[in-house]
Image 1: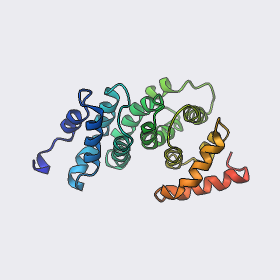
Image 2: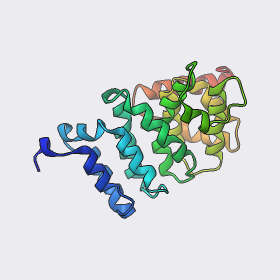
Image 3: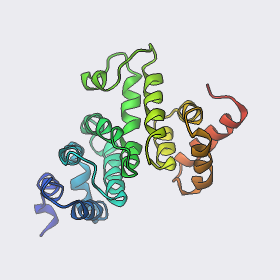
Image 4: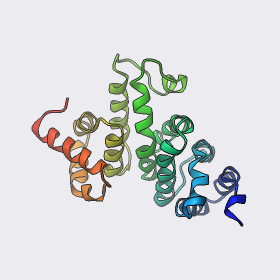
Length: 219
């Protein structure tokens, strides 16, 4: 098939359909992410289709590699499709937050930052109002608590949540809330242990936040 004849939307719908077994769907996502740049761009430009297809499976039955590939495609969409990416993130984050399995954290790393930044705006999308029961005037504070609560009851990878915090631009406060949650100290220790696996510039952001955390600053 010629690259210029491939329809990214159709490929995603066919490759991630709920009728496709989870192992095959995961493999398809890895193939999409590893495609040559011109072909990969077809998938990056349609983040809403990726999010809709994953949510349409009803449960997060992807492998970690598959979910991570989806996260990579989605994150690149934040520059390739500036209008579609926030909608995709708002659609996919609530779904991922309800999934305690390890693959969810790869999706949270890609979607939480966009939602968190949207919560800082005076007017927020209706879908986010439904997602977070804003009992606090600080909507981001509520989001931080929800993330920490979900983390305490899941198998999410600590390093993914650290990346989410860095991309959200609020590493110190997010990691502080997590540190004070159940099993918080072991979570922070895991981030410290694996910090070299974080790509720059996010690694520096997390390192600074960990230093602030150790000094008792960053509130």
